[in-house]
Structure formats: structure tokens, C-alpha cells
Image (cartoon, one colour):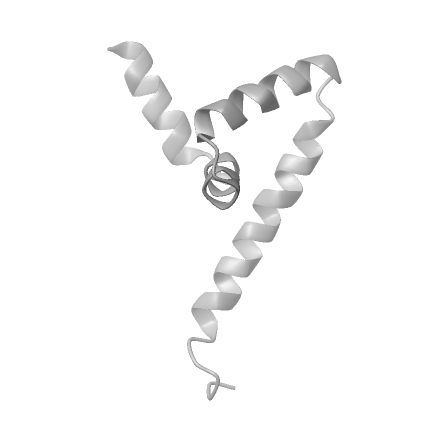
Length: 74
């Protein structure tokens, strides 16, 4: 029960990069998360930089989409 709450908290507060990649590529997001964790351990955490860059890009694109809803908005 505690682990389910912890998992829900982490997944709801995270950026959603693994979920977005899973939806775009057609893979389960849990397998992408596990792969990210394993690769992070093997490479001493360097994929974290890629993860943060993807999270930043997702946040920027979300704000750009929100501001201009139609072609006629300037």
C-alpha cells in the first residue's frame, strides 16, 4: 500500500517524459522507466541531462500550444 502511494506520487509529480515517449513510440512507460534507470546506473547518471532537456522541451511546447490556439491569434 505504501509503495503504491509512493509510485503514484512520483508519477504524478514527475515531468512525464517516459510516459510521453511511451505513447509516441508505442512502448510501455514502465519499461522505458526501467531502461532509463539501468542506463543511468551504467553511465553514472548522464541520461539525467537528456531527461531534463526533454522535460524542458515538453514544458516549452505545452506553453506555446496553450497561448496560440488558432492560426489567427497573433
